[in-house]
Image (tube, rainbow, N blue to C red; front, side):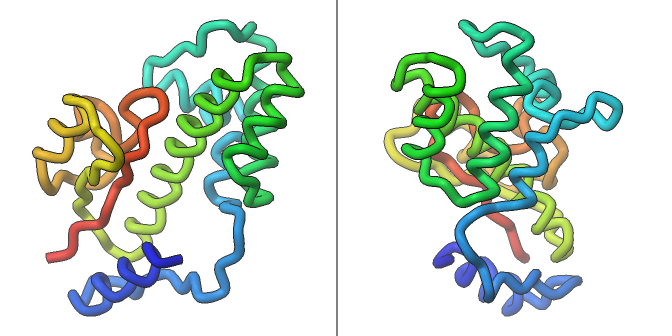
Length: 178
């Protein structure tokens, strides 16, 4: 919520081309991000499609289990589950270790949140974004942050639209308002 208030103030003070989306009634859960996990082969959505766009293969999971993992992520993100709760569901459904489940929960929800953020920025007329590092960023994330403002959703970060750049990435994408 704090991020939303700060972004709203920044966008409104800049006279953005469109008004900022009103999230005043926000509650835990992100239905827009959750929808990205739905499996719809024709529309190129779902977990497998998101991974394909990033040229990522999750090792240790059979192809037939992607849909099950995508459903677990969709339900958890939509319900506002914490990463720990989501990791627990992944661990139970797929029979994997806790560390792997936590990494998948953190990384894949970060990707969906980035995509949903870009959609919100587009609705507000935001044309540029920047990579903001968090935690102890590695060289790749630091390099992306050093790029400064780039076109929103254009794959300007070495083919990525935004975080995550690696498993467990904590970085975020921020709107650039001039």
